[in-house]
Image 1 (cartoon, rainbow, N blue to C red):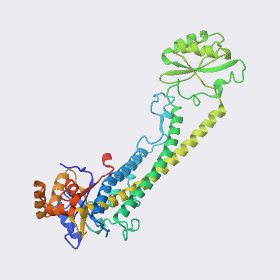
Image 2: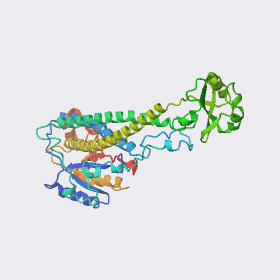
Image 3: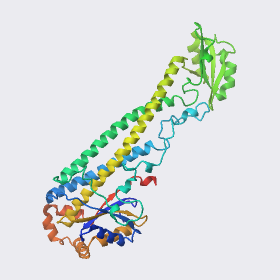
Image 4: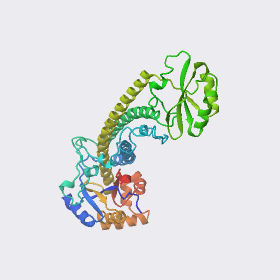
Length: 438
C-alpha cells in the first residue's frame, strides 16, 4: 500500500489552522492515538522568501534530485562507519589462510575494533541522531523540548532566496564528501599495505614467509661456506617418508643425513638440507618432479629485522589512520544528517506553497511510526491533514480530468506536472539509516 519504509520518519505539512502550532500538534497527537500509531514532534518553518511560482517549480525539480543525492551521501558515510566498526574491521590475512598451528596466531586481526553501529551514529553532543528531530523518551507530547529549529547561525535565512539556501546546503555536502573521500582513500592504501604484509605471514609452509619460522642457527653449519648451502624444502605430509628415504639420491653432492625437520603444519613439513651450491638448481628440479617444494629463501637477519620494524610501524600508522577516519566519519555523519533535514524542510516548504498556496503559513510535524502501524497511520493523516471539503474536491478532481479548472488555470503550463505528482497532503520520508542493523 505504501512506498515508505516502516522504520522511516515522516515529515508532513498542512495549512496552519491555529495561531499556536503546538495546539495543532496536540490535535495530531490525539488523532494518532497519543502514540499508538506514532510519536510526533513539531517542525516550524522559518520566514523564507517564497519567490515566484516559476522559481518554486524549478526548485521543486532541483530538490527532487538533490534529496536522494544527499540521502546517498549520508548512507555512504554510515557504510564507512559500519565497515570500520564491524567484527572484521582490522586488517587481517585470515582470508585464504590455512588452519595450521604455525600460522594461526598470524591470521588474527591486528586488534578487535567491533562496536555497535548505533554507538557512532550520534550528534555532536553524543545524543542518538534521531533525537535531532524527535525525542527518544517515547512521550510524543509535542512540548517545547520536542521542537526542531532551523539553524539560523549556520544557514542564514534573512535576505536569502530559497535557491541560495539550497545552493549553500548542496555546497556543504560536496565539501564534506570530498574530505571523506580523500581520507577514506588514504586509509585504504595503508590498510592494503598492512593486509598484504600480514598475508605473507599466513598460509601453509609451501607459500608463507619463513622469516618467523626459521632462525640463524638453522643455517649456521653452512654460513660463510664457499661450496655448501643450506636450503629449505616444504614436503607434503603424505610424502614425508618418501622424502626421508630419497632426498640424498635426488642428485649427487647432497650431504648425507643432513635433512632436519624445522616445522610442520596441517599440510606440509619444512626441512632443511645441505648440499653443494653447484647442484642447487638440479636438486630443485628433481624435487619438484616428486612434489617436494624448494623454497626460495635466503636468511638475512638484518633484512628480517627491518621487515619486522617496517611492519610494526605500518600497523601503528594504520591504526592511527583508522581512528582518524572513524572520528571524521562520525563528525561528517552528524553534519550530513543535519544538512539532509534542512534540505527536507526546504523541500516540504516549497511543496506546501505549491500545494496549499499563500499565505505561507504552514504546520509541519515529524512522525515516527509505530511498528506495523504505517498503513493505518497514513490513512489517519489523510483524514487529519486534509479538510473534508478538500478531500471531496480531490476525489472529484481524480474522477474527472475536467475538474479543478481554477487550479489548472493558476498553474498554467505546469498544471500537468503538478497533477502527476499530486498527493492529498505533503509528506516526505526521512530514512532511518541504521534500520538494517536492528
